[in-house]
Length: 392
Image: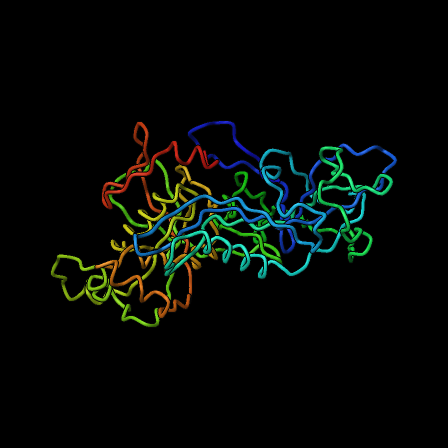
């Protein structure tokens, strides 16, 4: 696991030995209080956690969601975990975890679709667009055991209230606990130097050869990086994803198209009007309203970038939002930019965004009393927000 610094307002990276990468989705077990002589069976539940953005007739709304649903068709088992996934300590499933694991139906894609449909049904109609940020899909196994003719909840050591005339767990397909975790050595593939990182970071840093790496199923992969040039001295650098994408359904190729879409009250010079359009989005976790504000402001600004040949020695905030989630949320950024909004929202369903490439860009900020400040772009990020999301 990645190490964590104990300093509140610094993001100093520390050396790590290995990177923990779950296969497919992370799998956890809840603790149980079953008698020692009882055989434990584990019932799987899909858990969906993240920030949900919804675009309707009244604008863009956001809410935090932490939802779960039983992944086995059996009326004996509660339909959800309730608050257990938040209140109890979760442990990773490992090959050493003893017990019988019931096989979940469906897969991650079907689970995501189910949760998205459920969330959409809870929103006032019509819903033009729904996306999620900071999404986390996992499997959580809750323990049960049999005592006589009754099924018992292993967490509370009490009989299940819904087990009457239900199929016994023995009739369900089972699977081994399996090895769902992969440990990737945190060594630079180029120079062999120990990599640096923070807990929950998605990107590891090599200070020896000034390269950034991310963990994939095939091992460590180098990330393309750049920086925004600035004449001012910087105290810290915040990471952002710049995404080149093809937008189908509306004309959006250059800055002139963006100015028309956003109804900007300005006359553009020809060189700026023809500048290629790119999406921008924070590569770090932050509150939903701030994330949308930063993404909109940077996408409208379209700041210049230059290659990052040497990593800055100033503070680097860790990357905690993957580019895949940024790509999934490009349309909500588009909805936040368009004017007049109410006329544009019904057109969202006919728009298709095809990502072509992504670039990790570090933007220089100065550190104020309570904020990270970017004077050229007139941006401010409250440091307390980053502390609350675990970045500081």
